[in-house]
Length: 486
Image (cartoon, rainbow, N blue to C red; front, side, top):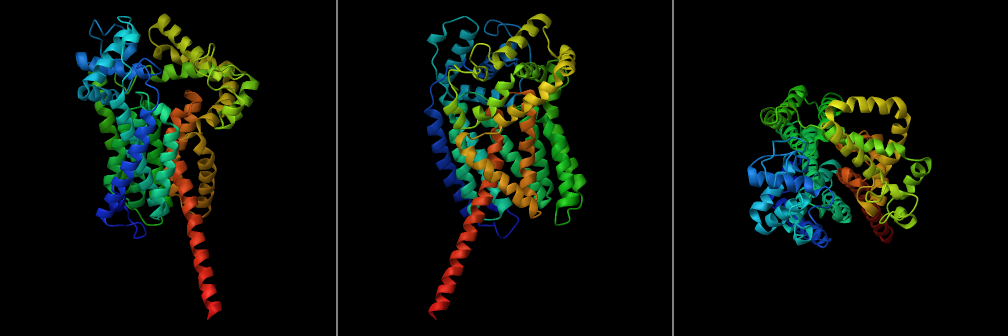
């Protein structure tokens, strides 16, 4: 990700060596900050939150060489070989496995945690140790941060934008350090998506085939981290055709061929995994049960009362929600929004999913009837509830988002009025995931952390524009003063 080497305009070009030094220096500073923030979070047990999904798969890979369904496997993998699975994507469990191979202490912690989860030992005897994964998470975040800073420099065409956008992203990620301290996929998703978005920006800006190919491969890798990103494929292809044939100020012949190359690279990466699933699991597809489980859990939010729906807007707003509501223990009227409280939307949805699994074994064969019944009776509630869920999910970056979101909105209006669509194209994929997670997920910002990138780029555009105008005004005032003296 050499910003200077990738730039296509003299306004943002710089020698390779100086650019490399800038990337290394800023990357090291960002890594030090993020590592400090993440390592200073509490030492979570590896059975907390969604961590068992990934550590159990890594355990099964290490012990049997089998990519399983982790805790959803039909057998106890501590005493028997589990069957191959395809519920989760392979990217993050492989990173966990790599950390286990490098750090024996972490491998022992994973083994103990999985055995405790299966009831073979006391969880209190397991060490709460995940330092290698926390450092890997910090490294992944830095990769994503630098990719966003490079994208900002390409879009705004000012060198200062790299630093401004990078610092804004760093502030947003530091504010979300808590979620990155878990052994979960958020850091990998942020990194892969940010590098993918940079390559698509370069593909649109330069029209070079290599960036379309890299972009397709990275999108495939992103889908192997979280299958929901599959919906971006047709959207990116459509945006590429739109920009190449309609929006680009410079002619870009053969855009259709380049989009075909993007599609082929994507198909190859995804095809390798789907082929593995067809051979090992006996089902050709990217995943199974994943979408069904998410929808069943999401339907629990349709029980939201009118009071909860209205209060969700101040509740989810950073700063305001923490002052007006108890977001930690959930002792007030919004207790159902806190996942660990009794009767929370999260627990109700997960309990229903577990009940259906016990009754039917598999969710995919019955999800169609469940969705049809929900839409027939409560479609209006489903759509209405999705509005506050999207509102809640958009505040990625915590308090810093109170500044980033208005600046991003202002930047979008600015580029739209000036006929400069690159920022809008760059932001579109991340923005399209926001309503998706509102309709199939929940209100947590952890699913929308990729929004920090577009937010920061838009804010950097506004900040550098104001700074540039201020410098021009100061220069004009100096010239006028000199003229008056003469």
